[in-house]
Length: 352
Image 1 (cartoon, one colour):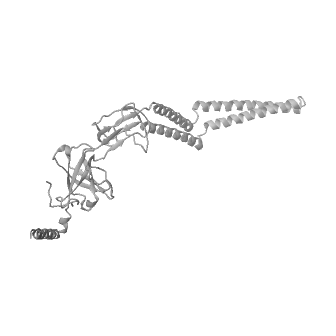
Image 2 (image 1 turned 180 degrees about the horizontal axis):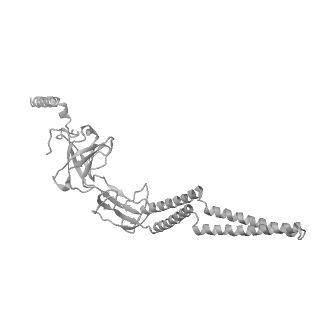
Image 3 (image 1 turned 30 degrees about the vertical axis):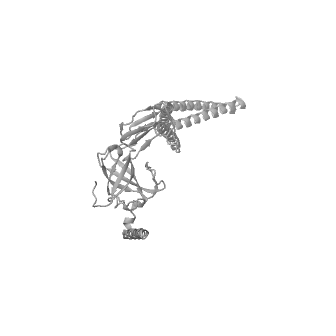
């Protein structure tokens, strides 16, 4: 009798459990401890880990040239302006190249002026005097030749003497014509090809100067934006390298006038996130304080997690969608701080 009684009780308990499980609604059964709660079940929010960054993101400022740092002019926390000098490489050799190039430009400028202006007045007068001098010699040689022709015709001198004076006349004539051509060359306007050649040489010299100045300018490391020096990677006297595979920044600069948070949104919740949704973030270092903001960008491509939590049960192969939250003015958080972000997805849910 006792055994029959306990057997009947067991049947009643099992039947009651089955009835209860069947009565549970489908969305309630999904709330088992191993299931991931949806945004609405969490109170109308999508949450995820995030990192604080300046509105400009982190800008790592390096050198286009490899060399030794002569001076680093900023410290961490310094506010800098766009174009402000933050570091200088050793550049004495480049300064010398600039001086050489400047001298070459001046020399070629003088060459252009000389070609365009032509000969000086003194040179023109000298050439003309040479023409007159050779003209006088030519007339004298002509007179001597005529006189000796008459003497030869009268049989007074030999043919040989007569021919000698004829040759002297031809020499005098050649010198006179040479003097005339020299004077015409000096007195004439410069040829277009001579001017073009002189100007081309000047342009080459200017290009070499510009190249030397450009190389020198690369030794002057300037801030690309107005912001704050977030980190100083090198000190004066250290060497830096220009490598596309291994970045070697000198300083990291960011515009932290406005802060943003880059959030990892789980792939199962990406359909709930929209640009313009209100959001807030919290951080362990700031207790229960909330920093409010708004979603300004939602990524277009899923990727691997950027931020890992310390939870031992965290899934590392989960895909995420990067979402950007811009915090309201006045938020002051360190760059790179890990925070927990909450994006409001239900319009009738207020921040708690």
